[in-house]
Length: 144
Image (cartoon, rainbow, N blue to C red; front, top):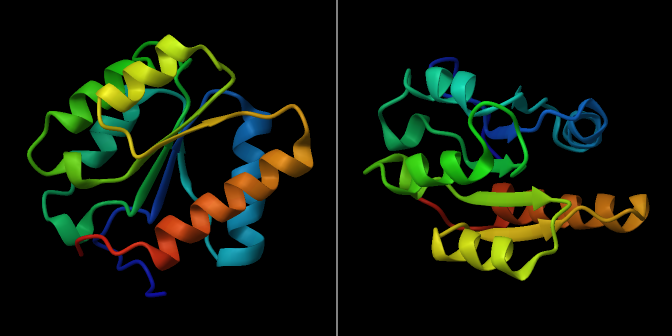
């Protein structure tokens, strides 16, 4: 796995307003991958950050996104990402407490790459996150 260059965005972005949920991803990445994800409470500061990067190779390798964030919710973030010529290539995995079919279907209609329900069982949720992050950062072939 290559190191992030200073003029590139973080490898992993997590848009989540819940501190406990952010800590799970943060601890896993720090301990097992040697870096911390870039975290945002909602989509507004995320797009300010992302606007600094216009080359495909400088973009994040993965975005983890909670649907229920304030100001600019997850559906709005997906809409902007997937309708942008360059940003639409960034894999987006939704992490949500919602197991409603309409939320899941709408996310897939909007071309997200995956949808994970936040499990109340910490062990199961942590293993699912680990597998997902490892797949997208190490195994998946994406444009760079």
